[in-house]
Image 1 (cartoon, rainbow, N blue to C red):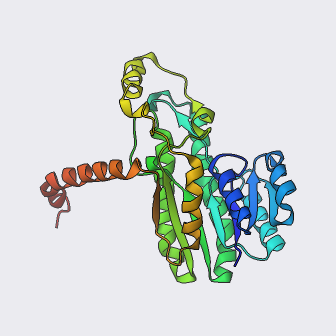
Image 2 (tube, rainbow, N blue to C red):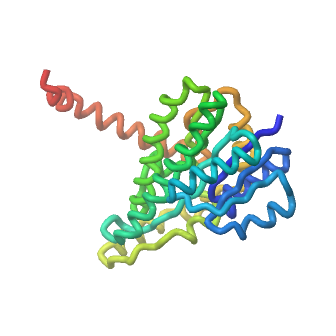
Image 3 (cartoon, rainbow, N blue to C red):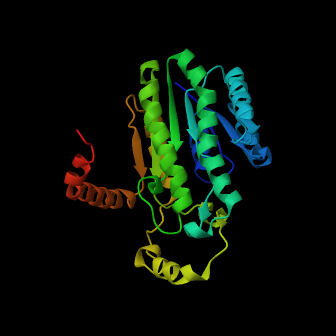
Length: 274
């Protein structure tokens, strides 16, 4: 049975590839982008199976209106994929105020507004699946990606709470956590104005062999099969890593955190006071 999928940021990257995968198998897809021009060829190829909407996800009212249009057009919304995001690269001291605010506005609040727009529809249906595009950098962080990680850590916390709130309505939530992929996301990310004091740190970071490895970045086309399986799963997971690089790093970082907490346990317990 075909599904109706609502995807933000569908003009390129993961959003575009996943939209095409859904359409190829016969699903209905609502595709959104800041500029609808980048979606025209999907409409030309797939016709009435596609609803293309120009949408600025930082505008809460516009998000609600877009979801209402999608519901009116297809009759239901089975899956929402909060894919749209922006990147920011630089040391913490280097971040420009507006760029820092913008990344939170898009990555966190854009996700929140689309989620809020979808929930009344899904509650009425007593079913639905919301996929939140987090990142491996929402599990752990590295130098120069602190602000991007902050936005994805926030999406993780928001969505973990959301999953508990909506489970009783038959709504599933999954945090999709890709490691690095060979998309144009990195090249389109905003670069902060550099401070020379951090040049040596950055040079050492990017000289690490894993950045130059042939398999450092995954093939984005390989993710479509995983996303199709995810939305078809009767009991989908709260979290799904995409790629082979993130899980070993997550295991390392979480083991390190647990060891640190354990070593300071006496101090922590005494601080409770009772």
